[in-house]
Image 1 (cartoon, helix red, strand yellow):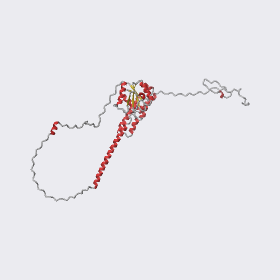
Image 2 (image 1 turned 90 degrees about the vertical axis):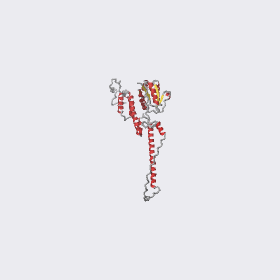
Image 3 (image 1 turned 90 degrees about the horizontal axis):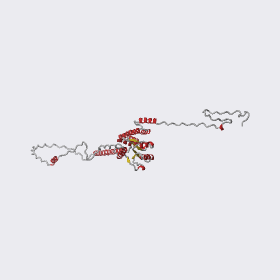
Image 4 (image 1 turned 135 degrees about the vertical axis):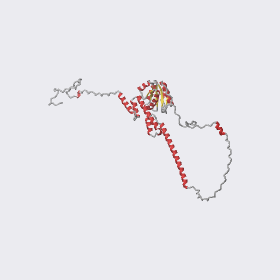
Length: 371
């Protein structure tokens, strides 16, 4: 299986892991998280393609620039730019792809360009085209929604019949009027009290109160709608600004006021956890598993990661602690011995040295004072 090496700074480990996950879809083995040195150069020598990942944090690193210069003579080097960074001046003429704003979408044009370059140089089949997006659910002018009733079409014959004037109906013969009945005698009229034409004062106040109530309700409903719309827009903008490859940023967004984006943020955090553990398992180093536990201390994979760290530490060769050499005692200085004492050659057998006591001839009498 061909391999691709990603040269990146230690601070850009998460974006490098996300890029590696996308490249593995093309059946490519990705090598990343290698510090500058012999191990990284050995991986570059066996890889047909090398990707230099540049960010505002890595463009000023002279160590990474030297590793990329070494890779130019051993592999096909492509430069991936993120966060509006530019490649160092020594690589301005090389092929570079700007991935600023990419969040892992398959249809992102710069990502498709980088994937095509890598697959061509690695000698593998290109990635399949991105899946088409589902049609939008918004109303489109000139398009009839599914299930809506079709307007009835009238035939030309029906239109002609409508245009023709209808014949007048023949007047029916008038019926004979019935004989008039005698009018009843007039009944005595009752006096009806006349109502005052002046409007009641209480009714006007009720009308004014009703108008005020309607206005307050309309303003309150409009204000609530405006507030909710602005709040939803602010939440959506905040979610778009969150880095999907930063676990701390995702947790901070979920712990704040995620609104309708809570489920999407939690799913993004879970996906990042799985990708980070898979990347640490592929790298299989103590540093990779410790970085995973630092980002996800409460993960369900924490026990496996800790166990693997313990296994890797047992496989490391034990370092021998140097023993401190105790200097030998200095030889006895003859000037420090009492008068009349003779020194003997040091005993090479390993036993203690013998000191000869002074002879009696050289000892002065007890009644003679000593000098």
